[in-house]
Image 1 (cartoon, one colour):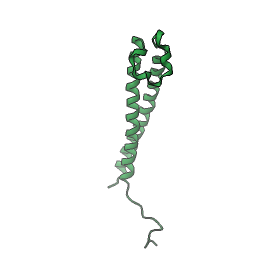
Image 2 (tube, helix red, strand yellow):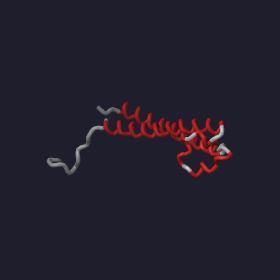
Image 3 (cartoon, rainbow, N blue to C red):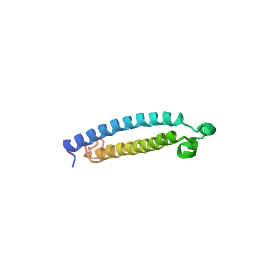
Image 4 (cartoon, one colour):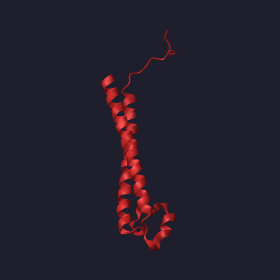
Length: 107
């Protein structure tokens, strides 16, 4: 059963998820820049490895704090993107079927 109330709730929820996603993306960028600025002086070559974000050995103590915040922000961003797809799917799946003009028996 598709009602205007369900549609309004899903659209408001989708907008809230989009806003939270943009804020989370901004935080992830800020944490990434602070993390990159705090590589251990003897392990700067780790900047060349994309997997170094997951290895605390490459960073100073402060860099590891930002690394953890960065990974949490990225995880939250991925969750919000998947939630946005889920809310969109919920909105579309609760919409009533429209009859096609080209369906057999249609006038």
